[in-house]
Length: 146
Image (tube, rainbow, N blue to C red):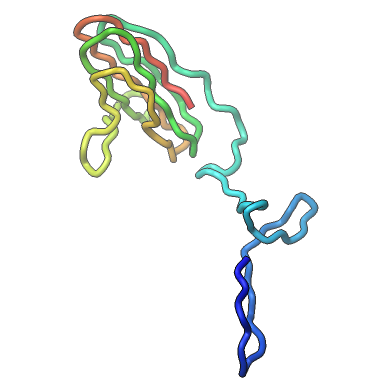
């Protein structure tokens, strides 16, 4: 902690500290050994994430649905020897309509090669994700998970 001299005329300095309650309900100041506890959009995880959506395909298909848990990161993994495209789609009406993900109006989560990356964080209960796979040659192995 940094020493701060207290000078006249006051002779005092008000101090404030951010804190939270510990397991016993006592105030504990935030510090290097006691970080501020934070939770995702949906609060503490109340349920484990769903089983991963996995498979492989050599022909065009739409895989899914995958119903992500709110507030958790969604990962897409694509592997294999293939050419073509894969893109993540989102639906809020049970898959009747599927929308391409965008960021600032540009296509998002569209791939033409093997990847393993975080692509989305869902904020709406009941939303579902689909993987639109369109290999033109080879086989795409895929995995969508949290």
